[in-house]
Image 1 (cartoon, rainbow, N blue to C red):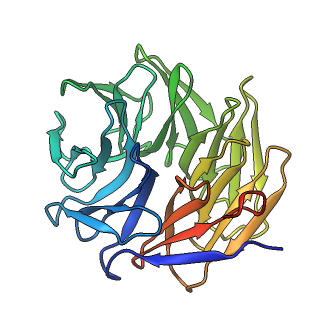
Image 2 (cartoon, rainbow, N blue to C red):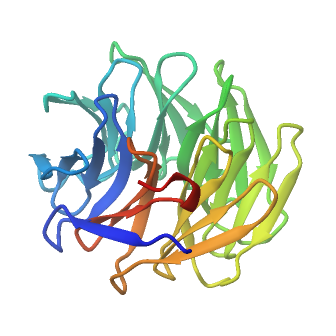
Length: 297
């Protein structure tokens, strides 16, 4: 039986839930990109909203190594930090109008982020020190970033490539086989596979640990896959922004898709929740929950 997708309202329709992650406190944390806020939802309870300045544009949120949540302020060009108690700190970045978007904790204990407007990858140490690394291509629009065992992986949306940056700043690029695929989301699975979405090509890509790139066309090539995460089984789960669905791609290549209950709900970020289900942020003001068939509950 196909598992049902449930929706939970967490904000008004104009607030714009966008990024989502599971925090160290067992709650779901999400960004409100339009209204400027960080939300917290403990499954089964009412959401709490921590307001930010309206013009900050918080986008991606992720756990840090310090027990706090870290997020990018795309419009304010800053990195934010919020404790599980709701205390917020912001870190200014050295390059003006850099457009930080993706963020993830690195294996070195620092926060790594992308600068979409300046073709750089940034590193923010927990003491506030920022280091920026220039990409070898102009106009690349680096987007999402994810941590591997000893490096960070990131999408280069306008350069049609996946990048890898070592902890010493050395950058390697992997060009994609499909032209103008426009990769956005990225995640590293438990076996070291790097999964990414090709929003313009309607495909999910994979880089195996030996460096081989495989592209998996989706049943609906106009689905515009956006964000991706992986579960403990190595399955990649992704949002189909253009098709109003949540999809999955198993390591063996099997694809499954699940329609969202509300039309045009604009799914963006996705994460494995504290309850083992998949949770996606819907820009219409809700979170969607999908319990996989083998992990219902």
